[in-house]
Structure formats: C-alpha cells, structure tokens
Length: 412
Image 1 (tube, rainbow, N blue to C red):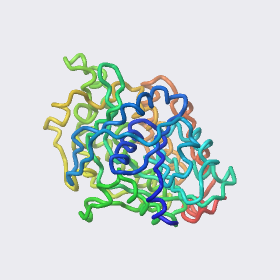
Image 2 (cartoon, one colour):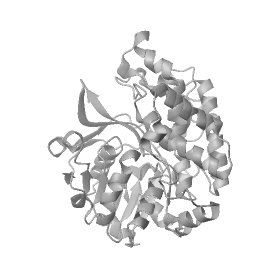
Image 3 (tube, rainbow, N blue to C red):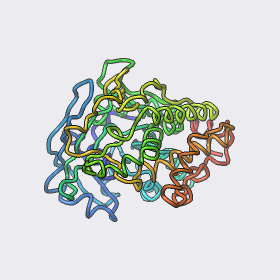
Image 4 (cartoon, rainbow, N blue to C red):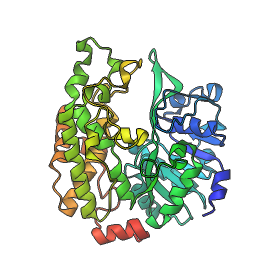
C-alpha cells in the first residue's frame, strides 16, 4: 500500500462525539484536510454551528512529552452525507460508539475505495465485525482494516450552562498506542499509517523506547482485550455507585463528580486486578496475547491510564487529592445510564465471558459485573444490546479457525 498517497489525501472522521471531535480538530490544526461526518439522526445537534465556529481544543493536555496542540480549527467539510465524507479520503477514522458500528458499517462498506485504511478507535470488537460484514457483502477491494485499544485522549466535549459547546477539553494525551489489523499480515502497514494521523503524534515521534510509542498487537482480539475501558469503568462505576449517587448529599455539585477522583479505592483496584487476570487467561486460551501492564498501576487514582500519558511508574496515591480539585467539571459518570455500564458491560464484559466459556476459562469476576449491572439497572443489558461471538461471526470457530481468520484472512 502506498502510504505516501495516504499522507496526501483527506482524513475522513466518522462520528462527532468525544473521540471524533478532538481527532478532527487536532488533525486540522496539524495542517491536514479534514472531513467530519455524523449520522443524520444526530447531526442537527452534534454538528451544529461547527461550520461557523469551528472546533476549539483546550485543556491541560497532560503528558510527559509536553505535547500540546490547541486552538480553533475550521474544518474542510462538516456533513451528514457519508459518501461525501469518504470519497477520495486516505484514512477513514471510525470514532462512533460501538453500538453504532453495525449501522455505520452497512452504509460504509459500499463506499470504501482501493487504498483506503480504516482505523477503528477504540476497537470494541469493531474490526472483527467490519471484516465479517465485508465477507457477507462479498467485498473485494484492497482496504486495510485495523483498530486501536484506546482513544488518543482523555477528552470531554464541554457543556456550559446546560449547552453543549464546540469546545473539547483534553485532559490528557495518550503517548502509547497499541493497534493491529485483520488480517494480521496488514498490521505493519496499518501501524505505519498511524504516523500520518496527527492525534497519534505523541506516540509516533517519541524516542522514549519502552515508555511510549506505537505498539503492534498480535491480533485484533489482542486489541479488543487490551482495551482497558471495561476493567476500569465497570468495577469503578458499579462498586463505586454509592459515592456517585450520594455525591450531592455530601455537599458537592453533581457535575464535579469523577470516577477517578472520587469513585476508586484500593478494594475496587483489587477487583480490577482480578478482572484483568481473567482477561489474560482468556487471551492465552484463545491463542493470542494482551497488553503487558504492571498490575500495581491499578492502585492509583489515575488507574492504569496514568502510564499511558506519564510513563512507567506514574501513580497517584489514593490518599492524595486528584486532578479535579481545581477543575470546574468532573468527567462522571453521573448516573449508571452511561456507556461505562450500558456499553462496557454488554460488549466488553459479556464477550470476555463468552470467550472464557468457549475456551474453558472461568471468569467469575467479569461475570459478577454483568449480574450486578443487570440488577442495578433492572434489565438484561446483554439481551438488550445483542452482542455475542456469533454476532461477530466467530462463535462457530475453534481456536485454529479463529486464528486463521484473524491472522491470514481465511474465513470459515
């Protein structure tokens, strides 16, 4: 694949939320041609006034490399027309929530062109789903599909006085990104193409060796399991629910609540360690790897995210105040009807549990999170969302078949 050709073409960013908007602004401020698309159902709200005001990047942008890119970005195209956004683009960035993947992919597949590279951020099993749907659609164009385990930012679209603004507050910038393609023989080109995506600049120019940089995952299942959102978000939200729901009773303002500043503690960190250990065993049984982490990093108010932007060994003791003491707003979640639960339980937790059942690994901690979330929300989140190994097109595969699909593109 001609990556220099990719470098000179527009970047199409699909999804105008907490990942898509900062990626669009960041890329434009770096001098690239940028198109931002969102679903016509949501666009009247999510794309409102961006053509007039642009998108503003602000915030502390904390990272050890002192990398910062701030300002107001005027995008080249803001649209709810998917064909208009994708045509002639080099990089196609999928930045929608996982629950929107299937509908987006149905419309995206016929529009993709030879030579394009699709980046799914974060993965949430989206790469497996997209490739499965490509098989069903008899798609045969030369397109690379890959995904990343996390977003390049801890970021929030600012809401002021109840009004959603076009300003994005970047709390921290991730300086280590782990990605892979499906089939895995495309991974080298896929990761190399990230050097032409400005939000990954802190990872691509770093010379810090083991601390930071781009990392090649073993397979896209490695990337899905390396996504730390479920292991941090779900125990933090479920087991810390009392603090979140009682926050205003403690004389605090609801909008100042942060799971990291207020909801984590050593006991919850231990549950997160056990959760991650189950994921490690699942990955091993499935024949792939998972990101290597220091489990002591869970015992920190920054959790295991801290080393992603501040390097190895960065931990904030539970006895210290954390970053939101001087911030006007926390980052939530402010109730349990939040993607920390409604997405990370039925997708993240449930698919780990299913993989464990398939490959003979017990996952009692992960399973307990599903049970508690269903009890707290008084409904079956798994049935409601409908994600499963069969939904991803791999439920019928044995270990050898799964790895042949992920590594060589041989679909059974």
